[in-house]
Image (cartoon, rainbow, N blue to C red):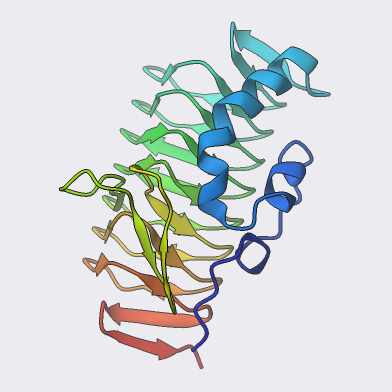
Length: 220
């Protein structure tokens, strides 16, 4: 099972204001230090059909924002995205269209492509979530190693990213069950599903079912 980790292997980006970033990044974690500067550049230029909710925060058409939501600048929220009660957007967050940012969930320095669902009690920090990616209730992206050292991606060969903080790298269609812990620098391939209550570490191939960390089967 091939462990794909390049941006072009994990994502098909159709978000106009994110395409250049995805196409210019060989690996998805390379985008993380660029999120803030990209958002500030887009805010300065403006994006068609987006409006300024408050200084440093742009929202698209028909965005639904519930009561008791906190959105810190800078942030860009795509069209028709729903932000549910108690969500905390800590800045450096950019989304595509039709996403769900769930109740009591926290988002920080992350990218969500189109139709991402993070609906209940989740933490998404220093992460990239692909089209239609889904995180079950209570699943979190752990983004810092206990020793504080740079995150290493454990693919077919080890890649030292040089970054202290990397959360989850979820490809298009990745589906993570309830109560999972996505350890720093974990990559989940396209259309791969993960059983609930799984601790994830390393790189998981596309089109698989992850029953446990060491029990991965091809989807039939």
